[in-house]
Image 1 (tube, rainbow, N blue to C red):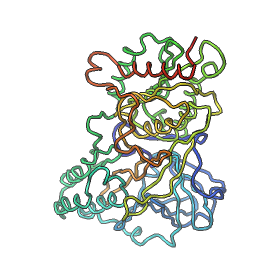
Image 2 (image 1 turned 180 degrees about the vertical axis):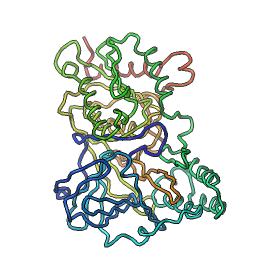
Image 3 (image 1 turned 180 degrees about the horizontal axis):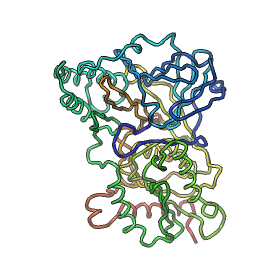
Image 4 (image 1 turned 60 degrees about the vertical axis):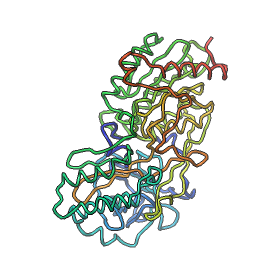
Length: 479
């Protein structure tokens, strides 16, 4: 449900905002009934939603009985009760769809709605305990990827060959340590930061070669470098909000510097509502009326948005930020989900999302974005959305990590948990930035070991130069 839940120490996700999220690709009559919601589950509109439902994509079954909700992870060979939906702090909302056999499921940490299709009854496999032998556990693990993962061809992985290689190594006497090593050998070559396994407390994941995982240590080192190399002559001191994940300073010439190191963890509660409120409050203090309108000394004439160390989080918060950076609506991206177990290239109809200008003060002038290999997930989807902004931002740095999908969280028969992507985020032309990442307009190595050692930040300087060029084009240079 939550975008990086099973990944790394980089992010544990939450967050929501309803003001920016866009138009779902569903009939206009859908979602007209009122709902109430609570942490981990949601109220429904009564008996109309009672029953058993399967998702279009996501390989999930939901059983609704009044205000009781049961979730099941499914494959062609398994059905396992999943309790994580109650435990991760997300809020689900269910609304009736057109006719008695369709409904919508919205999770507040995500931007999209999942289509539900009514089933006559809970499948028999869901009523029996899952066998937890090493063989059954392997088969469920392998098949979940086979039925949901969209990127085998792009990553050059023959998943059937993976089965043929590792399945013979698993027997009834395979130990947990041996099975964990086998699973690690299967998923590590994917180098997909949205693929992860938690086995007996051990986290296994693999990121794009040559990139650094966002985390507290890297974030602290980067902030120290930025303070030394980039903000020594700042017109105003750096202020922070959201437990240090949001920072802002004003540079000479009416240029703002905004750093966001994740789209989660903004509060100690780390819930959707709390994080959204904290982020909105921070943005209110950053994008004040004096900085965004009128002819006054505090007005911003340019903005550098630093997302170089951003572990991701919740897309609604990224769209909230985008809504403070525009004066007109624009297309953000569309999402589609793999929905046929036998066809890796078959997806649900794309759901488009728009960015609308915030009713609060917002900045719509020249924008430079700093990005790189430590820009993950919601950090990337935020950039993808902003590429459609007018005026278009200039992106400086290196390719982003190349992981966009919400993570499909799964449980295994033996109690281990794992996650994988099953979605694509589409540009207006229908392409994705998965795997390769979003390329910069100006390529500059960023936050390297050498730069940490000598205290320099050339990407920041290039972003400043690029911003000056954007200002000249728009005529927004401070007098």
